[in-house]
Image (cartoon, rainbow, N blue to C red):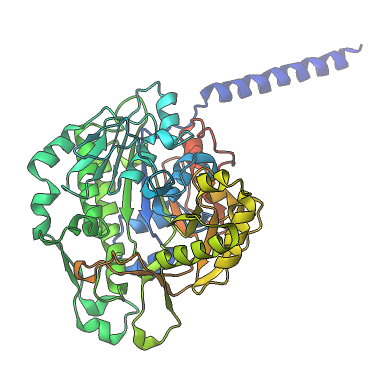
Length: 542
């Protein structure tokens, strides 16, 4: 080898060593991005991007506009079909469909008692500030909060505040520290003894500032001049709206929970939690979950509640701004916090339009439908009580009688569906077997993934749009409780992510499956996804 070649080889070796050294130094200097120390999960019932865009210029700069300008906006989170807030929240926090998680609604029909009860009923768990006996035991899978607790060895805390019990428990999960809700009877913040923590701020609130003590002095009225609300017809701009919660109204707490005043109550205590418990200021990740609402108010004498709904959004904006400010001034700061906000689908049930508009409509009586169906089944299969109930647009057959008479369950379901499909007010009817087989996917009937087959009915009925479902006379207009009508709506809602690790604003305008929210949050926190979350996370700008 010549001296020239030896020199070249030596130069190449030196160059390679220098490159390797530089790369090693660069890699040794790299550190993983800091994880958020606080995660705030907010579910907003009935949230609509259309309403947000309509009112964008009316919002301040520190609430919803901050989400739009600084975070990631997902325009369409798809739930597959219309779901109540409890089932939708379970999808968001588990990353699993109701068929897997076991939570397909707030209530379930009990075949033994022939009554409806809360899905999360657990007689072994006593109530705290309530007589309700509830726990997350019926939830078959883990949640974001469960995985956070496991990842931090139990040192990270998970707290939830929600107006309703079912959402509070679903968001808290199996291993959360506490989940509180507003008791419909006494107005106190209640929980289940399944959870062990009772924060001091909650105890103080219940003893010194109980909602029941203050409610008759509270008023929900328009927060700006009526002529300032956009897209309102001229006649609506002549009158203010005003809703009160008088002591002689037995439903007043339930009504209050459907208003933006409940959002303020939740945000008040959330702020107290952040301050008094130093959430997000330790070495581990803490989690605070909140449930808020902008759903249409169903207890107004006037069916047109557009002004109330817009007012709900204006007030939501202020509550979010207040929460973000508390995180900055008394918490770890927004630069150390992940906020994810997801809407649940707008409810498909609304107040009936005034009869003067002559919209095709009718009244569907479940009691009458059960009686007619049972008479038909008697004629076909002999005497007996073949139909035992109706719940959530599902008819329940008497399985004990069917077994006793040695009948074929699938055939009786088919008979019942065929009869119901010809009944006034029912657009279509499918058996549970049809739904499981996927034959009802393109219809208004709930798809397979959104039902729990263990508690589902035998026949699913799609009630005609515009028809009122009568609740056997229990709706009392004198108490502000009105029958509601069926209305088909898209099962989508927006979502927002705001975190220091998200480098620039981003809008995802293609529909995404609601089951991706949980793995996406888990990915940002760098923890495992819930154990039934099979979809990959969204790839955000990080």
